[in-house]
Amino acid sequence: MSSSTTPEPLAISLKNVSKIYRLHGSQGDQLIDVLGLQRFGFRTRTPAKEFAALRDLNLDVPRGHRIGIVGRNGAGKTTLLKLICGNFQPTIGEVDVQGTVQALMSVGLGFHPEYTGRENVEASLQYNGLARRDYEEAVQGIIDFCELGEFLDQPFKTYSLGMQARLMFATATAVRPDILIVDEVLGAGDAYFVAKSKIRVERLVNSGCTMLLVSHSMQQILELCDEVIWMDKGQIRMRGEAFLVVKAYEEYLHGPIAQLDPKDSGLPALIKPAAIEESEEIGDLPPRAMELPSEVLLQEPHFLPHAENVRLPSAPPAAFHFEAPGGLSRWDSDKGLKVIGFALMTERGLSDTMMSMRPAEFVIDLVAEQDGIFHCRYGIALNDHLGTCVTRLFSPGDRFEIKAGEQRRIRIMLNPCQIGPGEYTVGISILPYTPLEMLNSCSRYDLLSRSFAIHVKIPESLGSVASGFFHTAEWKFG
Image: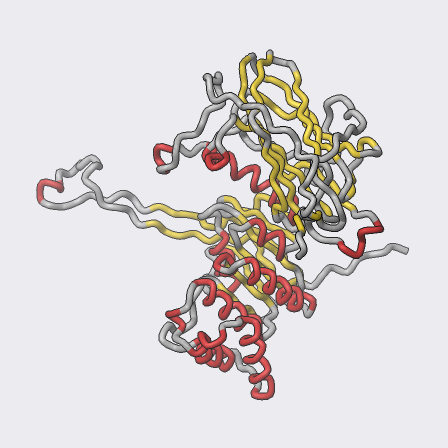
């Protein structure tokens, strides 16, 4: 007896869809005037061309899925959404949409600027055919979500972009559509708005709604979507689990960014990591403060960072341990030094889990690709499961001479680990030594983004005071 799985019902289906635009030719004097018409005041025109915004696209979206869509400008994201909304018809192919569609394609679109927020809400609900018995409940739900207060009765044109986004999102989701489409509208909101939106989206999806979200914010994509589609040149380049697609897209995106000429962008020139010239010497670090004034009391749980010297087991030879899903994500970088190993050491030895309030050590192994004198700064970024960066660690300068093929080990002691319990990814960067305020315009020797997965747990004795981060504090009474 053979078993078969019933396919999920589809909310959206596109089969062999192409959308082609005709680009009209332009006039210009630079073309060869074969007939000599320019002498009589005529201007020549280039031939018309065709541009395929979408090319032979096939896409099935099951009901109740939360799908993000990413891609560079011009990749075809908005054209795809407008085909699903019915604003456009495909040049070739079939678009099948099952159910009602509610679309937020642009902040302010569809809301009258002279009407108040309340009047726009009422008009939108009436347009959607909401029954009278549900009308007052929906209005109150919108008011509670927006938190606009007295601004609700002010003209819509006086709202900030964030206020407009809140009102539009709340109104669009007050009546549960079968398909909700959001294109960059959430980008105008703050973290609090995104957190509230996530709860609202989860309720919609749990009730059977399908959501498509287009955003250039990878953090929003990871927070709100389970699956991601990467659009490139009118086609689907990758589709899969949100973390894996975002990770691959970020790695790809770095290539075009790295090729930009700072002379054309108005940005300061990149600091190249070639041979290092003489620069400021790093003075001796001050001694550790091992004692506190008698009137200062430390927080509880009681700890004083770096007050004790800690020795942990030695890390094994250079190798990559605890790779994140999707493996290493190595961004395009300059030649010089490369990461060849990562390990996490605890009191128990090599482990992918460290304990809050206990010591731990990151170990990074590098190899030189060429002879030289280098002056480096190292960076470590820890992101939580939603992609939010919880902390970044940057080293002081490290000046050394090394020959091609030789290795160098970097050890970063957390004494103790002050990060709260959770699952995290680790990224590593090797940079030429640069002031912190100039890191965004600095080149790099290597960068491994979201490449390793680790866990942080909390001792059972501290379970009642668990938090995202354990901060030190000085207490004084009297």
